[in-house]
Length: 208
Image 1 (tube, rainbow, N blue to C red):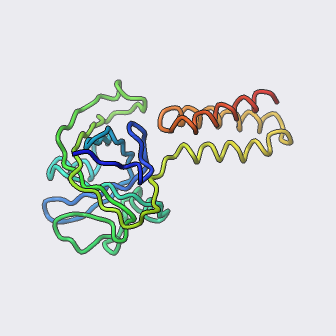
Image 2: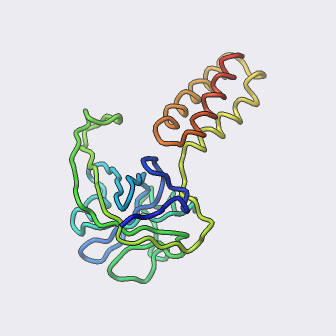
């Protein structure tokens, strides 16, 4: 089955920040903030480092839910592993964030293990690439758009550019270093328009 996720602002092969919710075999719900990639048709992908509750639950139950939201507290609590029960629906067999503007239920099809050497972020833990198939898409708010963090990097670069000519050399270097890192992220996760905007902005930085 083909799914059109463009109405949620999701394009094929780009990366979006969402809240992944899972439930363990004892019915305990858990949330984590993880990137989500739509591969086209009904295929999706995410990657999770070894050791997380989310990963263990996914391995046990072979399902997870991608909650599309821009709630800053929900993202923070999910990242800090303290999203309270009051954030979840009353469903006993699945973990879904209450009042989520949209969510995607995913059935896991395959899990590949990658070593740290295969991944940009180096560390001691393996990374699990999780491939799944969309079971259902529920949209509660037609205006919701999935969050791509490239936009944040672009906005930061624009704000810093407005100050670039009036700060000292040390601060300029700091701004440029942050711009270069944000451009790296944008080139990895964002759409062509955002990439073009960042390239234009960097060219302006380099003139000054």
